[in-house]
Amino acid sequence: MKVTWIGHASLLIEGSIRIMVDPFIEANPSATVKKEDIPRLDVIAITHDHEDHISDAFDLAKRDNAVVVAMHEIAVKAGEQGITAEGMNIGGTVEVKGAKFTMVLAVHSSYSGHPCGYVITLDGKRIYHAGDTGLTRDMEIIGELYTPDISFLPIGSRYTMDIVQAAKAVEYTKTKKVVPIHYNTWPPIQAAPEEFKKLVGNKAEVIILKPGQSYEL
Image (cartoon, rainbow, N blue to C red; front, side, top):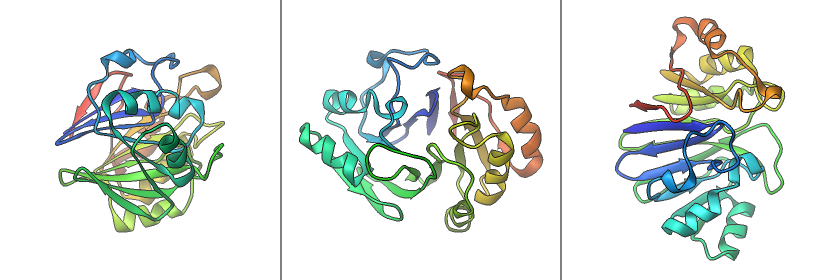
């Protein structure tokens, strides 16, 4: 399975199916690809409907006839545009095209419904995308129930966790590998991933990707 960090919070997962989380490409100053460079998608998962997470989601869903997985209110909006959508809420799990999406808590804000993260199970691997969130002890539950093979955690502060909180999240989630995301897209969310790596220490393998880079899981 290959996971590619598009930049900001956008993630492309390629295994037996292709999944994209929070497509933010065309207006993303850190993205190294264009929307037309994204391969055909099977599922698009949305953590919340701020523009830097949803801006390209519906267009890509229409292009590829992909299924949108999202909070109920966002799924309703997708359905109104003729998109096949699976609405859900915190704690729920849906299975789409062989992948399981478990919606977990994110502490943030949203225009519609409640923000969330996902534990995605695909091809025997568990991927935790935290979405935009502050640190919460609910992450301990994620660790106890799922022990993610790899986690994608925001470190940019101001709107999400900073590096200190994200390092504690690594401990809570018992993740084996972690990729920092949601940083350095704009000046207000500048962060040093190398410092995050030092804080994590031997608790997990920290994988620092540049936008457009991939990791084989």
